[in-house]
Length: 341
Ligand code: BGC
Ligand code: CA
Image 1 (tube, rainbow, N blue to C red):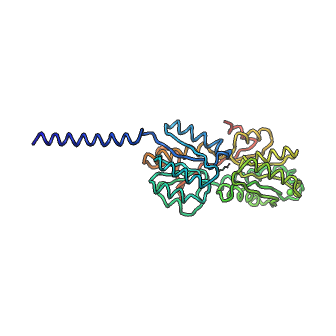
Image 2 (image 1 turned 180 degrees about the horizontal axis):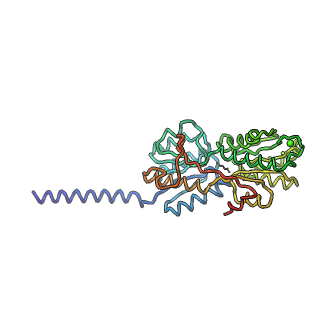
Image 3 (image 1 turned 90 degrees about the vertical axis):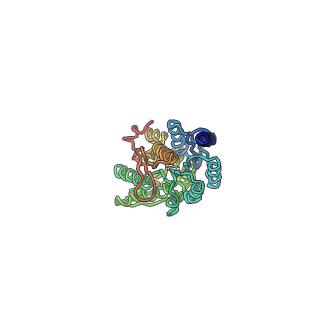
């Protein structure tokens, strides 16, 4: 009897160790695997700042990240997420193509029981972030960038009376807008202009054109067309939702031999060079390095089943948006040196 109990125990122990061996075999190793995307590799900021930081920070943390190009197509991203889910990644780090399509991605992650960190394009659909306990957002406070850009422009406008070329006391501006419906583009467009109005200055919009890809080509083409239009010689200020579009506009201005005050957002290296060369008047640091780090810190914690901000320097906003918001900073001719890499 005694012997058979012992052998039963032995058999049970053997069974347990076989099961754990099987489980260990099923998951090749215990390295965390992150399935990630960029909405399009053609985007200066996403490809030039966020992607390299996501890669190097992941490497430093010993996690594996795979970043795919969604080529500006939400349908493509939906398929890419399906593939990540089939391959059982531990966590998803997703840059929406269409900010209104968050619900689709969240539903997929929820059905698969995989945690999800959205970054850079905040979901616009109301209540969607509350539909899944394991979804978070990492980005910025969109309005802040427009406010900072606007205040910078107001201060410079006041300091440079000759910028009012027709001396009518009104700011005649053109505006290069990013993706319509993108919270950053919408807020920057409104807030940058509102700063003038709030400062008691009158504004007149001569033209505004949006580009879903926030591209340099768009900036170049629109600026070139505006300069030769009927209002071409009335333009006093060029407001750009991002640096990428400003680069194109600077190119068009140079080609036309015209010099106008011009402002962007992002603080890309090339923008700092344009500021140094006196070809750009200011930009706003969009801190992609820290946004990438925050996205990965949250993702890794989520994959480990920890509270997402545990052991990190990030805090979730208290407004129910489940978001980490990295601050923007003004970058001007007097401080741009501090932002050089
Ligand atoms: C950046 C833009 C970029 C966009 C992509 C914004 O936060 O300022 O440069 O094109 O994100 O979603
Ligand atoms: Ca004027």
